[in-house]
Length: 143
Image 1 (cartoon, one colour):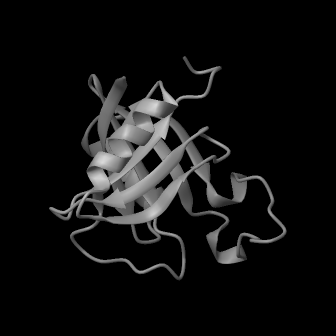
Image 2: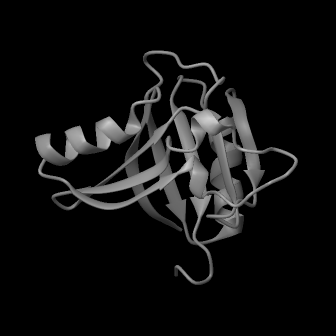
């Protein structure tokens, strides 16, 4: 079952500034900010020094609405118009796979569904209408 859907902003290296801006402009409450430097070390894919302080994920509360934000990873293309995505959170892996597969019909997978350190199943895709979706499942301790 889908348990949440919210806007997800992607910034081009100025995520920390964007968090402060939206906090002030929208009277947002900053619930959390994780940087790429906070990720667990992976010797096969070390985090470059220039990415350590970039925003991996920020969670802001604007009224009753969740707003998420992250920086684009250095070296990855950044295209104006792609800075707003939609994040879906599901509480069931089978349903997440079903939704992901339906959304990818006629679209393009950016990141196949896979386990990450923040989600048992997470993936990204752009649907046939050009909308980018982030699909994630809640961990057993988050339900």
